[in-house]
Length: 164
Image (cartoon, rainbow, N blue to C red; front, side):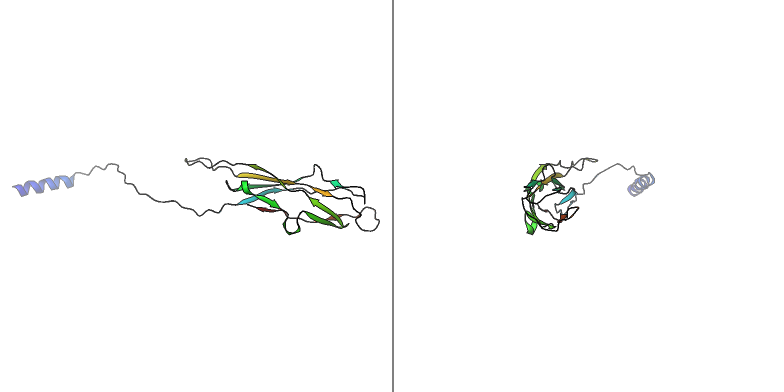
C-alpha cells in the first residue's frame, strides 16, 4: 500500500506542470584594456609673414601674426607637453633673399578636460586641450639678391616638435 501511495504521489507530481520562478546567480567577469595616451593636432594654421623688408630698414617683428597650433590630448598628459623647433632651433634663413630670422619661444595655454561618466548612456568626457603660439623677428640685415621688381621673396618650411 505504501508503494502504491508513493507511486501515486510521484505520478501526480510529474503530471502537474512545474511552476518556474525567477532566480539569479552572480557571474562575475573582468573588463580590461591596454591604453596608450596620446595627443593629436586639431589645427595648425598660419604663416609667419614679415611682409616686405627693405635691406637695413631695421628689425621687423611679426607682431600680431602668431601661429597657433592646437592639440587634443588624453586627460592627464597635456599639462606636461612642450614644444621645440627641432634640430634647426629657433633661427632660420629665408632663401633666396638670405635673411635670417628668429622665432619666439612657444607660449602654451592649457585646458583641463572632463572625465567620462560610468553611468549607462553617460558622457564620454572631453580631452585636455593645448594651444602653442609663437611669432618671429627678422633682424636688421643686408640680405642678398639682385635688384628686382617685384622684390625677391623667401620662405622656409618649419616643423614644431611637440613632446608629451
